[in-house]
Length: 331
Image (cartoon, rainbow, N blue to C red):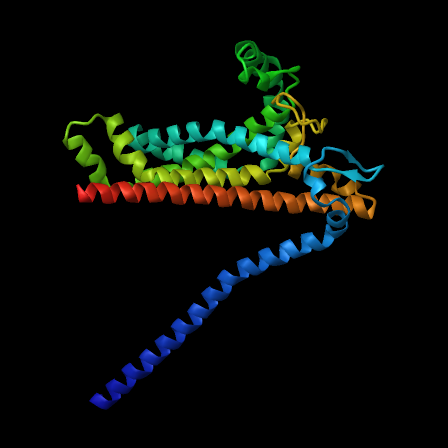
């Protein structure tokens, strides 16, 4: 083959590569934009179907507690309250357990036990929510009613402020049980992601601390956790995202009996998702249906706001870590 033929082949191959790169870039860009398009279409659909409720009730829809389909008076405040309370309770319970378990698997567990634990955690994360709901209905609820909630009332009830969270009869189907079932559901997700983040910490970080005489816990506290903190926060956000939108499991254990906004976690209630699941088929009038769709719109907006705030907190954490790193370099 002559030099001219080789040059022609290289030129043709390079042109084909550039065309392929351009096609791939366009396809990837279209896939990325499709996410935004789907989100915009979803918001538009919810706004269209909830327009009657939006016009009729306005801002009072999220500030009032009356939900009477006979009188056509709708206020979603109890549903918003139940969603936020159960999600926060679930997150407060799940994060310490998940991070502690991830640290054990990544830092302390012998090699022969790491694989079975990791496999089990990933399997738990994939279990359908209805299975958790059935387990919560038949197993968790009786335990909460007979043992856990009475014990919490006896131990924490006399304490000011905190005791107010556990006032009222222990019936087992309430906001607290809803938070507990969410904690059980999101713990595997948070643990799995946190474990991978902790394992991704450079070995030099650990070895440097151990070389200067630090203990294992001192190494984890000063070298591992600061490096992995933003990733662990991201794992918590993933868990929170699932908690906010969870439907069936919470619906089966939260009670779905009271729309009162109280300070007690032992009050039966609703979340926005459980309210939609319970009442969607009962919406037999246009304004009732519109109100249910507006609850879905509010749920979408609440999830977006919570995730944006969480993302800002992660950026702040990362900025703080970068500033300390730069300060260390200057020193």
